[in-house]
View 1 (cartoon, rainbow, N blue to C red):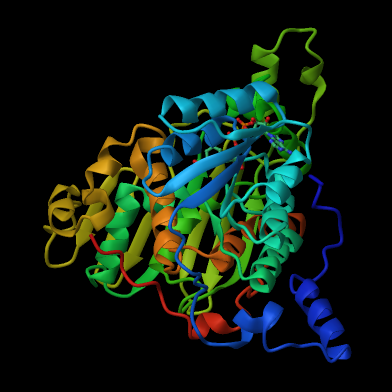
View 2: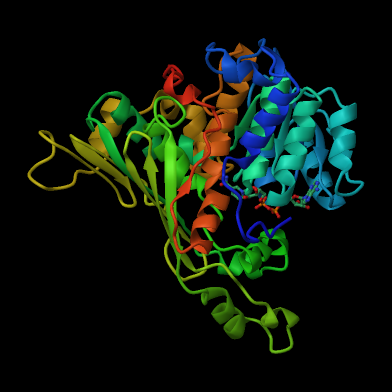
Length: 451
Ligand SMILES: NC(=O)c1ccc[n+]([C@@H]2O[C@H](COP(=O)([O-])OP(=O)(O)OC[C@H]3O[C@@H](n4cnc5c(N)ncnc54)[C@H](O)[C@@H]3O)[C@@H](O)[C@H]2O)c1
């Protein structure tokens, strides 16, 4: 499952080609069902409003518990089931819900596929999926097949086939599949989106995004992500975690809603960091010292969009370095950056200098960040995790389109395998599949969130 890099790679649109050919041969290209979204122009998926959203959560580890804490305090939702292969993780999450003053959710801990029992037997509207990467697609598609909406952690899938499977299942069953890209809800990123929408940056031409996070201690840990995340660095070489940086830049560029990723080139450097860390920190007799790694410590990619815009995308998780997502959006009139947070707007900022964001927050703060609930949210990355869940629940309760849909999940997550393909082929340019099948040209950004 983990090794998706075996050679040679088929063309990136192979799956689409085969699927459409097969259906055409059968005379089975229906106007409804699987292709309803691909052929009609009725905009993004909506569903009937759900008065109280019943949620089942799979994967109650580090991130799952953040979601439990947030969901337990969001009005109009009820966590009714928790599933984790580790009974103590299930029990801890159940207790969190009880401690927050709600009924005890039903627990599921009978092995790796017990989520199926939860999904098939519980009355759920929404399944939260915060499991290790290999489980994202199987759990998400199982939920949608059984009529449940899905919120899946990042990346939604690390294979192209998985991305297509999510899109096709969401279309066929007309269920939402939102990738939980919390960084789209962080304060600077939302301010940048406001500045773009207000036209302050002019026409957006360039973005920079990345995941630069020293994960060495986490990857070598004997608990949590150490149990599964390091394995991906052993067999894969590319950008393993593109979504945190790319998600918010994609929003500013209206990807899937007026523009589309066109192609990507990617390059990885040597693999040294994990080996070096193991030599210095693991006991001499630790068998893990003999592990070998394929992932280049620094991976850099360049994406070009159909409208000719450029995006620099970085991935850097095995070396000592302070955290950064880069986050830069540049247009004909100005530029905003997240690390450090600063802005320059022609005609407003002095000379060639940067300005702090304070004045811009006063004038352009996103309405979601004006809410006390966001500022007071303690669980999860300074409030953005609360906001992403609160928005999702609000959209389901009002029956309005989600801020991010399955096409966003697929296009952004696809960078995992696409960068791996490019790295494996001397940085060859690799086409990005069009998961909207042409509808990016007519789809429009969702209406701005009102305060
Ligand atoms: N958005 C963010 O900021 C952010 C931060 C951290 C992690 N994540 C993502 O969240 C996901 C989980 O990461 P984590 O840090 O919580 O990892 P973790 O290892 O702490 O938690 C994973 C949990 O899933 C459980 N699990 C594994 N297989 C399962 C299965 N088949 N059925 C049910 N439970 C299963 C494990 O027992 C564990 O409790 C990953 O996709 C990761 O990329 C996102």
